[in-house]
Image (cartoon, rainbow, N blue to C red; front, side, top):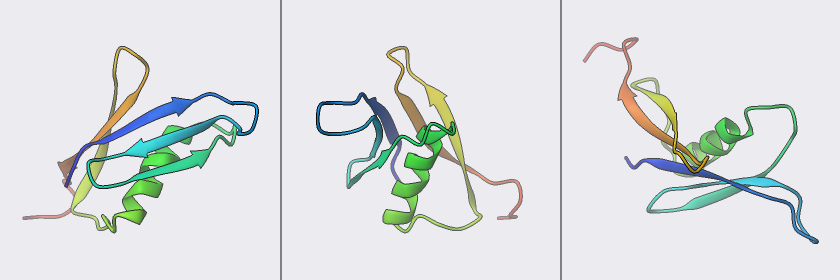
Length: 81
């Protein structure tokens, strides 16, 4: 698995505000919903696109000084190894 970087992309003359989630293999862009946690929604959309599913890993979120978000995986306590 790879780390996920989520970046806010402001509105332009032709597109609304959005969040772009990317990893080394792929990227996904979601429109901003103004309901909050759009960065989480973008990261989860990339998880689905990459078929990274299951309960073995938890997604852990952090924020960089420039405002971008970074997600990584931690082994879940819910599932025994």
